[in-house]
Image (tube, rainbow, N blue to C red; front, side):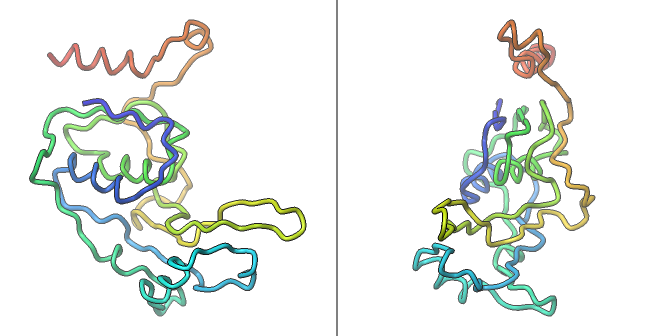
Length: 199
């Protein structure tokens, strides 16, 4: 199986978790910690929460001794591999600098498994964690410029090196000037070779 997440900017963690459970052989947690610095903002008139998100913050988070508001469910919850339609064959995951957020989370969770090989380039999303989860819109009052502001800090693995690096591939393959001119996908070619040689 070949899973291409090179241009996947992330998104729904439920989808990422669903896919991860179909591949992994051991139970896993999404995060060692998941927290917000505050429930409210002094710029609340600019932050455009919908009613559901604003109300949920008081129910899904608890303030801990570090002063942060933790989303305890995902810090405690252990997900088990799926029993139904679990894939046990060889898996090749294509990664790249445009793999962020939930895509990088998936890559981090399957990396190191015996039947999984990450091929390509370092992910854009960090292996240690990222800022994400609830991401409300912000609208600046004078210019009307809009952008999205992550509410939570997600630490995937607290033991990982905090160097800001992404998830590193097992086999690094980069595009070259010549491959771009010839419209060749060197990463796909590498996967094809690996599959052919394994038969």
